[in-house]
Image (cartoon, rainbow, N blue to C red; front, side, top):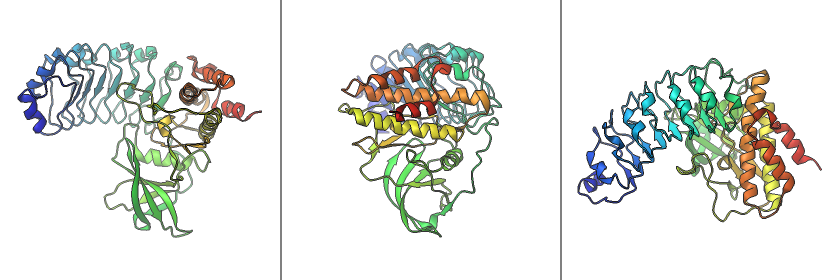
Length: 428
């Protein structure tokens, strides 16, 4: 391990970031030599099961990744780290999160794919908390204290054991990105028998892109019926993503059906030699591109735009109406998108034709008032997206700005429905 050797010989003095992945069975105490500068520490994919009691000597540490290790208990020493805001312990076998392990300034916690059955009440007492990733655990409830988590913006609850969502969840003023598929409360998505695409009918080509849940390739598809066509093929990375289960993503994408502002689904992949799950989608024109990059460690829940991004009034209106139409269509299909973001928006790069992609966080809406209330999280997310576009437009689009303010207001019940947003944008 070259980096570990460099560390032990003092050749990394002044480093702000350190990544030691693979091979560690105990915490290298030489890391404390970077205590005055280290801000990001990645110890993922090792065989660690504890951290030293004096871990808080890393007084400038903001970000810690320990995913893929052997921690059954979140180390209490983390709670004493004065600058720590982001903690990632994915797939470590976690069974317990002690209250004292939660840093006072916690902003982003990822504990996906573990064995947690309970969460401490202290989780709702972290005022900076924005992003909480809990998919793939054994949770049946959230702490009641989280009803006061006024800053929470993104919440992943998929593939747990919830029989119902908390009554207060839809009232959180800033919750914009929510996923809960794969719980007992989640009715199976009713869809017609899906079209199946055997692996033998495909000729994969170049990779078009990569996300947290999978890789997307260009492919040629030769179905049993119909003409040969070029498609986009998404191959999922594993059985559990940060948003939820690939099977639920595929089902939601196919259930959404055909719509001009959705990437849509054509067929479910079968017979992959490595049993990888996959989805066939329409292939967009080659010049289409992603509207923005995903959030960074610093931005937490906000997408990253090219600094040169500047949109004309017609482009802003085109993207806004396209994504609103996509969201309204999903709601009419009783689906919540749950991840309505610029980084999941593909557009033509010119006049503003756009489609919404990535159904990884999509969930079936509950019946009645609960479902109508939860829809407003997508409306808030759309409002955030529109605000980002307006901030990068030199024109004063007063009517759009007024609509945007309606959609991001903190009282969810006062926001318009997505169908109303669509109708207003389509009006004279």
